[in-house]
Every structure is written in C-alpha cells, then in structure tokens.
View 1 (cartoon, rainbow, N blue to C red):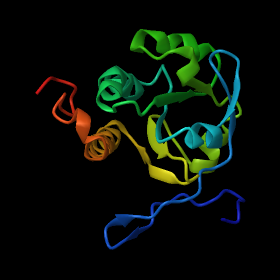
View 2 (cartoon, helix red, strand yellow; view 1 turned 45 degrees about the horizontal axis):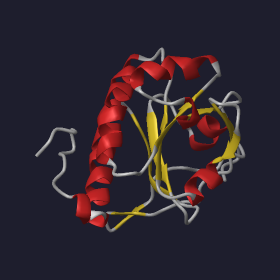
View 3 (spheres, helix red, strand yellow; view 1 turned 120 degrees about the horizontal axis):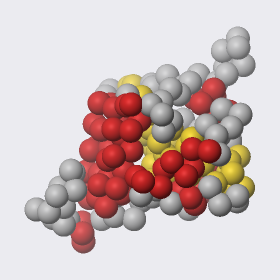
View 4 (cartoon, rainbow, N blue to C red; view 1 turned 60 degrees about the vertical axis):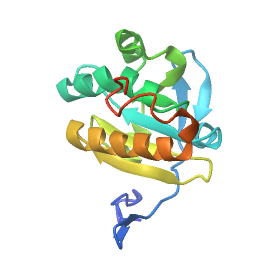
Length: 169
C-alpha cells in the first residue's frame, strides 16, 4: 500500500515473467441491473476486462476490435467496464451485450488499479490478475494477441480456426 491507501499495481517482472497480483474487490452493476463482483466473474473462469469510455477516440479503436478478439478467444469472455450507466447503450453498436457491460460509477476499480481509458486486465478463478493492467491501444492490442496465443495453446482442439486478427487461416 502507498501512503495514499491505494494498493500498488505496478507490474512486477522477475526473469521476464509476469508476477500475478490479487484481483481487487469491486462490486458492479451490469447493464441489466444485476449486481456482480469482479471476484465472482473471475471464479467463472478466465475473463478479459476492458476499461473504456465511449467518448474516447482510443477507446473506440479498441471497441472496434472487441468482436474480432471475442471470436478468437474460444469462449473466454470480454467484459467492458464503463464509468456510468448511460454508456451501456453506447456499447451496443460494438456488439457488446448489456450483461457484458459493467458500470463503475464510483470509479472504484479505476482508482484502485490506476486505470485510464482504454485499459485492459484479465482475471481468473485463482483470484489473481492473469494479465495487466495495461493502458493504451498499442499495449492492449499486444496483450490481446498474447492472450489469444495462450488460449490457442490451452485449447488446441480449435487451433487453426482463425488468426489473431480474426481472419480465417
């Protein structure tokens, strides 16, 4: 913890390996009005989360890639975290269903994890971050390509169906 009371979230790298950190506790309301915690989402399996603002130019570029990434993740869901309820309906043109939109109106997760928009992190059932957080379109794209590669390695039965950019092989 820092003297501000906010947990440190700097990536720790030892011998070029990512060292995981605990998933922060956060309670959201999804776009359907259901309360859901970040830990509950992670317990359901590996999940990618994008912190976005629909009015942000870089976020729009990331949002334009969500459908392609989702098709390449072979069942690993992508959730989008937005700052207020009005943004949920603005995610629909990007193919993001209301139950995959999480509302962080108090900006608790953004504050705890020091996230800007756009940012990405991934969580899993062990209650630790699997990737990130990373911010910016370039780093998000690179991280998504790495995640897609890891998913392909773990789920080889689907190997060869598509490339990282979503185009058929």
